[in-house]
Length: 427
Ligand code: NCD
Ligand code: ZN
Image 1 (cartoon, protein in one colour):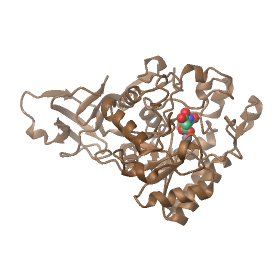
Image 2 (cartoon, rainbow, N blue to C red):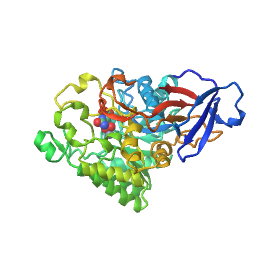
Image 3 (cartoon, rainbow, N blue to C red):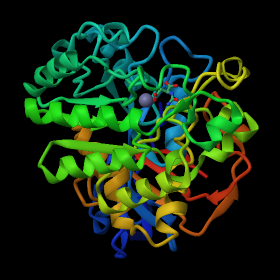
Image 4 (cartoon, rainbow, N blue to C red):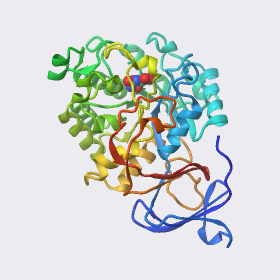
C-alpha cells in the first residue's frame, strides 16, 4: 500500500543506454516532459541512472502462515527498497497456493497491501507433495491469472508427473519453474556443497550433479512436450553446461541465478553460521565463475533473488537442522553491480534485461520490464552508481534478519523506487 503521489518531473536522469533525459510521471504513467506544468514538483536526478523497475521471478513472502517471518506488506516493502516494482510470490506457504481460491487470496493481499506488484506462483502438485497435480488450469483461469507454477522448496521428482505438468500448462502458455534437486542423491538433510569443505566440516553434502541431473531430465521433458521449463537458482557449472546444450538445441528453457550464488562461496559455512545455509548450497569459486559467465552471455537469462526470510527460532539450530534460505531483495541490485557491472562483465542495458525485462517476460506481466518511454506505466528505479555502504541487517524492511550480506561493504544504489507513478521507497 503506497500513498498516492502527485505528478513529478525527474530532471537530468541518465538511461541505461547513456542517454540523458527528463522523465515526467503523471497519473501512473510516463508522459511527455514538455507537457509538465510550470509549478510541478521536481526531482534533480543529475548523476543518477533511471532504470525500469526490477522484477523478481522468485520471492518467498511467507503469507499466509508465517507472518512472523514475512508478510506481503513487509516483503514488498523490502522489494521496493531494493528497486523492485514486481515480485513473484512462491507457493510454499501455509496453506500451499495450490487452488484458485488460494491464488486469489494472495493476489488480493498483494493488491491491498503490496508496495509493488505481486504476481502469484501456483504449486505444481497438491500440498507440494509431488504426487498429484494441483489445480493448474483453475489457477490460470482465476483472477490471479497464474502463469508460473512451482513446487519450489521441493523438487518435482517424478518424471511422469513432470511430463504431465509440462503438457498441461502448454495449453495456456504456462511455465513450470523447477527447484532442481535430486533428493535420492542429495536428500533433505544435505546442506553443504559436496567438496573438501563438507568433509572437513562434517556436513552432509550436495554434489553438483544432484542439480544438473534434474536439469538434464527436465530440459528433455520440455523437448518431448514442446513446453516451457524455467530452472530456479542455478548454482553449478554442470547445470550451466546442460542449459547451454539445451538452448543450442532450441529447447524452450530459461534459467535464473541468485545474487548469493554469484557472490558467496562455500567457505562461508565454515563458521556454522546458519545464515549461510541455503538451498542449493553456496558453491565453490569455480562454480561462481561459471554462473557469472553464464549470466553475462545469456545462458542464464535472469536474476532471481530467492528471498527466503526465516524467523530466528528457525535459524537458531545446529547447521544441519536449521531451515535453509537467506534474504535477497534489498541487496540484489548491489550484488549484481558489484560482481557483474563493477568488474566490466556486464553493461547497464544487459543488467536491465536480466533484472527487469527477462523476468517480466517469464511471468507474462504486462506493464513491467518496459522501456522508460512516454505512455508506459511509471515503474522505475533511480540508481546512484557510485554510492556504497556497509550492509546493516537490523535496518532491513524485511521482518527477518537472515541477511548474508550483513557487515559487508557493497554498492548502495537505490535512491528511489516508483511503482505506477507512486514513490514506494525514497532514501
Ligand atoms: C527456500 C525457502 O525457504 O522457502 N529456501 C531456500 O533455501 N532457498 C525454498 C527454496 O527456494 O528452495
Ligand atoms: Zn528452491
